[in-house]
Each structure stands twice: as C-alpha cells, then as structure tokens.
Length: 441
Image 1: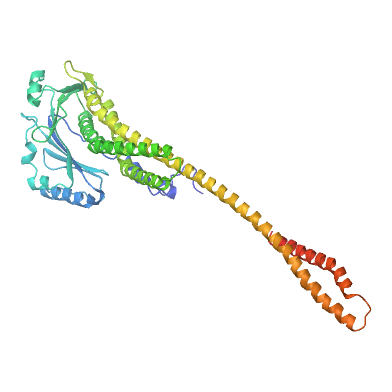
Image 2 (image 1 turned 90 degrees about the horizontal axis):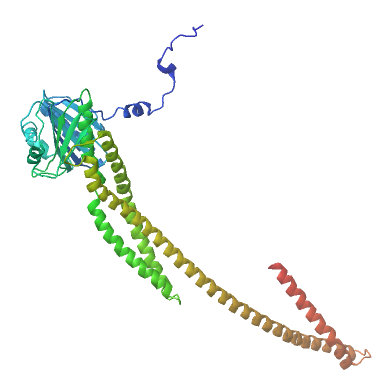
C-alpha cells in the first residue's frame, strides 16, 4: 500500500496535459526587457512586413548571426530573439503580425550621443537588405549619472530645434528628452540622462520609449488613407442624399428599379470600404491603448520650460487618432443610412406592388363574376337545347307507339313531358356542378 503522503511517481501524476499549456505559460514571459545599463546607445528599426515574409526575415537574422559567429534562432517560427554579438554590441529582434523590430544596443562611454556608431559595426549590405519597408528609425543615447547635466540651450543645440519635449520619468530616476521628429539622417532621437536607476529599470525604460515610438506610428499608419477615405465618404453621402430626395419626389414609382440598383451599388461600396478598413480601425485603437499604457508607465513629472511627453502626444497624436475614430464612426453611420434608404425603397416598392396586386385581384374578381354569369346563361341555353332534343326523341317514341295502335294523343304526351325533361336536365347539371366543386375544394 502506498503511503498517504508519498510523492507522485511521475510529474503531475501522469495527467493529460492541455496541448497549449506550455505555450500559454511562456506567453507571460515573452519579449522580456533587455538587461542594459548606462552609458548606452541604441538603434531601433521597425520594418513593415507581410506574414509571407516570416521565413525571409528569419533567414536575414540568421545571416547576421553567422556574420558575428553566434547561434541563430533555431526555428523559422521564432517570434523573438536576443543575443550578444560581441563584447559591446547586442541584438534584440522581434517579429509581430504586421512588423518586425531590430534593436541594437552598444554599451560603453560616448562623446557624441547620436553619432553613426552602428554603421561601422553592422554590415552595410545587411542593413540595406532588411526585409520589409522602414517605418520607424530611432537612435537613443543613455547618459550615465556621472555625465554633466545639459542646459536647455545645450539640449536645443544638440537636437537642432527649440521645440523639445522632456520629463523626469520613473519617479525621478531619469530624464528623457526628444523632439519626436526624424532628423536629416532619417532617425528620430531620444536622450536619456540616468539619475539613480538600478537593476532592470534602464532596460524597462528603453523598452517603453521604443514601444511608444513604434506603437504611435502603427496607430496612425493609415492616417493618410483616412483623408482619402473621408473624401470618398463625402461623395457617397452626397450621392445618398440625392437618392433619398429622389425617393421622396418619385410618387409614380417610375424610377424605383434604377434607384434600387444605385442603392445596392452604394451599399456594396460601403461594405467594401468597411471590410477593408475594419482591421486597421481595430488595430489602431489597440496600438493607441498601448501608447497610453506605456505613457502611464513612464510616471512623468514636469521639467521647467518644456512640455512632458504625454502633453506633446496629446496635442499631436491624439487629434490624429480622433480623426481616425471619427472616420470609423462616419463610415458606420453611412452604412446605416444606406441600409435605411434601401429598406425604405423596398417598402415603397412592396406597397406599390400590393396596390397593383389589389387592382389586379379586383379586375380578376370582376372577370370571374362575368364568366359566372355567362356560364349560367350558357347553362340555361343548354337546358333548353338539351330539352328540345330529348323531347324530340321522346316524340319519335310516342309516334311509334301510336303507330302500333296504342290509343293516346302524341302531341299531348309530348307537351306533358316537356316540364319533366327540363327539370331533370336542370337537376342533373346542378348535381354535376356540386360534385365538381367538392372535388376541387
């Protein structure tokens, strides 16, 4: 007998394991923060890719690993990969559904925060051949606590603009400065000054800043297309208004078929736009929520003389998101309007058809009554004609009997027979009509 407190002989007592249990457990630890410390420079690239380019992207990362002589990601389905290329250079690669990110970290002191240090460390052919289309390019410099604090004038000279954004973040653990604008070399720039960050705080801060740059670009990815979509919706709304006005004026229903065809075409265009934009709308809202969450995680406090990051994005980024959201609501409203107009037209057509059917039924009822009267008249004539022929036949029979010597008056017999013949014919026709009506009832 086994002891009550004995350990199971196999892990989890040999239970059947849910197939996705390990994948779900690993998802909580996916895409961890990099363990970095100041002084540090980083370069962050976001490439728009298609799902079909997953193998090509993996092969490209493998080429870089072979260049540095390090182990490449083993699976072509890998979604993230981190490795130290040499003593100072590190790589973090992530593949998402719509884009891939390449983040390079260069540890060590520096004099020029935004110099082209990575150009000498990475193969130029490899950089120029990264799969996809470049969406975000950001350079970040993380100055140590020993570096002298820069004045506002020095910061403006470094970034080449007076429109700077800055804040103390992580409860005063560091200061962040940027203009959130691509410079002449195509890179946006972020300067971080370390005050008292320890442990994993630098890695989390760098990740959040790069996430903000990435997700704000992804959130407004289709903003230029939204402007064209707004113009298209204006044209469709005008066309719908003219169609609705024509419905009210067309009291004779002469153009119902043409109007219905136009409404169906308009409904098809609306549904096509809705279907092609639905994913982008939902993705934009999701990325916007991620930006808001990353901004909250920064825990900003104001630096005198410049707006904080949240204020800057609220003034520049939020209006674009409201424009996109307005386009989505406008498209939904247009779709509902087209649906109501089509329903109204179908109802109008149904009413007109009902009126036509009522007129047709009344006409048919009138014709049926006329046919019934004609039939009754024909039946009366038929009774007379059949009576005439039947009494004529009987008259020949009476004459034959008189010729045989039967003593009766032939004319009197024929005259007396006529009422009974007509009554019999009338009853027979009535009986046959009754049987026919019962059969088809």
